Image 1: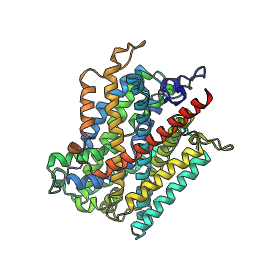
Image 2: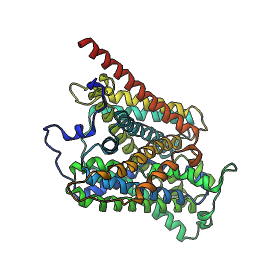
Image 3: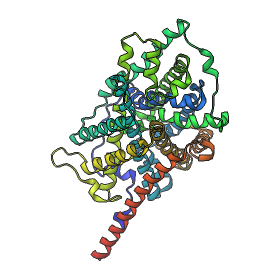
Image 4: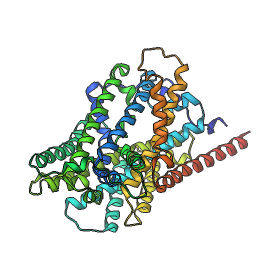
Length: 468
């Protein structure tokens, strides 16, 4: 029976005699990693959907999502400086509760969040490609482009990607440049007296929603733009003196991205009417084209957006496939998922399996031409991660009984409790205002994981019985 238990993250990270990872990340690289991981699909693709929920006050959900992320980041900082090891949320939940099934569900939820995030990015990529090349195409063609893009990600993933944190500097610069272009060109438009700032403080909600519920719904969606900061804790073993530099860089990275998001959302609604913004699948490209229609850079933004969301998709599919491969290798999931390409040394079975899930998701949510595909998939991503974050906040309180051997960041007594409450508030259907489709997608994905887990458990049980 010992073969069937999910792996302890501490066992996976301690290495049992393996050398520790090389500490190569200083403050600068860590900061760029955090910023680069947060920036991406969310702000490029969902600004219009968020404006559609609350009207011109689209900046408010981003500001609230920033505050929720900041509170939860404090819990992550206490844990990462107390346990500076890779494995992130799964490690903390396992240390706190010691329940292997719960640890598995956290791992699988994080993996699924990567797939839904990449699926959202593929749809955003297709929409920006059509805008960039001036293609007047319908939902069917956009779907085909999104599927083709995901197959391209599959090919790149199978071939093998040499990852380096220094390459992240270039990727972050490109992603950041697109957002700075939006802000600067919008400011030029605003200084010229062409903007309508009255829209920035105007709430326009659906008739069946109060302002409070509309803000909650928009915040649940806006949180998709803030996720990514939690990935940095997986770099703890490769960071120089993490207890000292992690808090400073985490707060700085979140502060920079939060400020950029609020500025972009204010500029967007001041330049473009809310109705036009919410109807666009490429809202920031619409902002630049409205503010500077004759400016050449306006034609470049869709391609910058394509690069940003493509990078997000690749990173998320890399993460998802490696997590699935790890669970297959440890005997938590069927062992075929641990198969490695003999020449490329890439986890081919896990890559193909996660890609098939992504292709199915993209197709399913795109069947209806009126379906808000990116917001549905992005909302599912934030739903899964907020559920994980609530467990991380509780884990901080549980693990207070363990004394650390070294000095570490402390989140205090109040913040983890507030973090748990706010994350759960944005998860529960009656308070978050999420559409039922997000729960359906998350439920199907987690049910798939449980089925695989149960099949593996019974397989190992039968094998153990035969060897006795």
